[in-house]
Figure 1 (cartoon, rainbow, N blue to C red):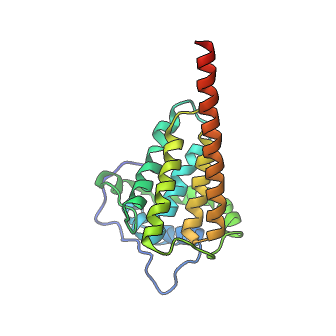
Figure 2 (figure 1 turned 90 degrees about the vertical axis):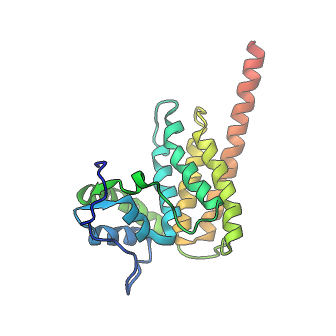
Figure 3 (figure 1 turned 135 degrees about the vertical axis):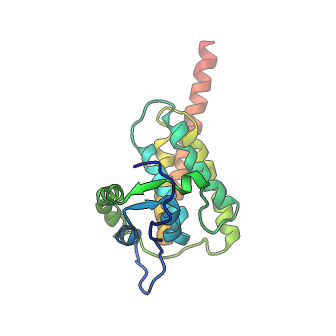
Length: 214
């Protein structure tokens, strides 16, 4: 990847067209197919359109599932806070600061990333489909955004072994959001609640341990 200003000569990538890809993996492949030599995050966001929140939640949650040094989630979890806050504020699709929006990615690099993620995405999409979606009104979406923000805060807090489950829950919620799968959303929500209980237990035991030692 390279941090390059947006090039006006880069063709605009749009999700509009006579045939809209049904799945996120198909949509990402379509974005790559239509892209020029370089593509900006703004163009990707515009192509994802209403799926941008779910897609960015998924993308930003995945790095937090990888074993990392203590404190790394403090940085890697910040984009999740950024996305979650925009859901709470009632935006219809993600907004990116100009510098981040103009961040340019080589088409070949994006192709490699999508190629690696594609088998996993397709496996998940075999189980995920539009059904029983409960967040059809903006107010419900914003209220659920508060829950997503809560999980994002847990991810950011540097708690040993306490960040993986909420990040996993956010990844499931993100994917379910792109496909509007209420069943999958429910699973992600339950995992998120369970992770919050685990984190609360870890904090309680840590506090009790320090109290006993001191």
